[in-house]
Length: 169
Image (cartoon, rainbow, N blue to C red; front, side, top):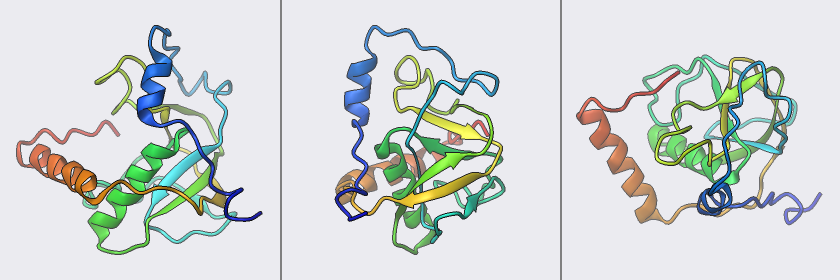
């Protein structure tokens, strides 16, 4: 498979918001997730190989002092880009990597983004307590402009300083 075939284009978060307008959200739960299909993406700074497993118990991408009880992933590429960029920004290492992953158990809507700024799960973000298998690495993806990434980092730092950096994990 050449790099162009491995680019895995999906709609943007903005397009997903527009696409969800007027559509009722059906919650994705551990008991009701089989209808959600991938590909699914996971962003990180970790160097992984096809076949490797990603499991809970790792530091969170946006706060390396917190250990995640879940593995977070998305059916949209853009949230995985955020995950990868935040992981690199908080570890000081790189490169940012995005993997195509396969959940090995049930999953649910990520409560950190579902029904927050927009109704439903417009970012198509999920989490699982089970491992996920790496099935490919996305070779071609567009990073956020540096000023946009810095804005996100500044906002996360502000929330942390105000004690508002709540994560439902």
